[in-house]
Picture: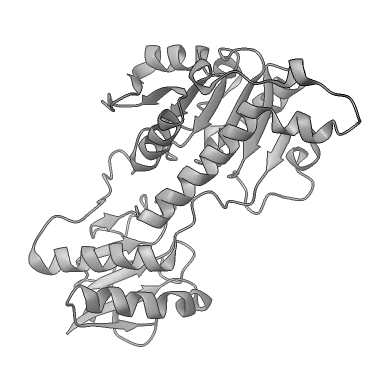
Length: 313
């Protein structure tokens, strides 16, 4: 019998119990799932893990074949010196679709000028000034072309937008202008009427959007960040909003979460705060990924979405 540990907050077990049991049964696996403290660590084959859960020291888990993260982000665990087992991040269909829907919705909100229209319900007919261009005449830039970024870029392409993507390593995606490297980043930013950032949190991406790089954007560019809060220099963004260099920012992730009530983002008229809702793991689809990785581990096959420790994701 395979032994697994559910190492998330106790209150999340109710959401995952049924979906996990079903996904494991559908995969033909016999797995006993335990809560922390119910079984000796040296008997655990797989840890179903959340960074907010009780397991922070992996030293005693000598039999564990993989740590299966329930979150897309692994920045809270990838640097843990006690973690020597393979670490897999979560990429599941529900999380991906949630991100696509969030990004597409806010890009369309910006593209159609809905904020201005909704704010101007004053009896004045603004037909000529309110008509947006067609999507094909609007340049959208996606920072990050991993599974989530590529899916969002493709969805926007299908709506007709002129989409450019940037990533640290060169990618090739049909219908998307793909750039990489420092020169590619500058070229991408210079054309970003709407900028979407879905990059991971790594030393290379920290403060990537700073005073210098924000100044490269077309004046009045609009920003959407459902990636990681560390990607943005907050002081630089606030300054760019004050001068009009950045027209509006929609932010879903922050360096400190929950975002403190006194943070200037809350009251800023050109900032929309959403409470980290863009890409939430769904128990049903996340459980299918967990079950598939356990099946792969038992069959001696490569794990899905195994983290490259050197790159940090």
